[in-house]
Length: 236
Image (cartoon, helix red, strand yellow):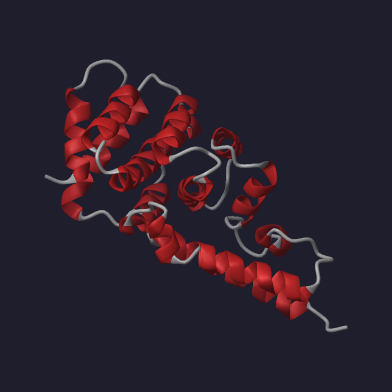
């Protein structure tokens, strides 16, 4: 039996809060395998929080559904279990803040495992921008999730910059450097971000294989930002 099917069936049978059932199921079923637990928790976090974000926004568009499939390469036969979790989370009376806190706890503390929580936020941004605009309610939702994840304002600004559409993204904000930073330092920062965003690094910190499209999208944004700065750099 697959992971998603086991979790979704457990939650469907449970009484009371869906949130409590999800958390208890993950802790109990995968108690002896913390690495597997992180991968399962990551998947559930994306599914549950994207459902809560859709509820906060008021509507689920076809583009958002497509974006969900782009970052979550789930087998066709598993989609029923994914949608079961999605619908349960959307209908749950627990607010998104409670979900965010519980998901942060399952994935690890907001400090030690901040990279993995950033990956979750990346996925939520990808879905939110799918209709061509980041709505104010979506921005408020994402900013609050970042706060619960213990992601600083400057760090959140870098994440958001990766998802600004068109040529409006500030490449310096995206790379986390100032415009007066010497180019060699910018280049070192760029290489550091590329290493951190490599698919192997993401897998090592608990991101499931099904979500590696996130790594490709992040690398594309980082590369584009560096190329933009490099083109405008004038040697002294």
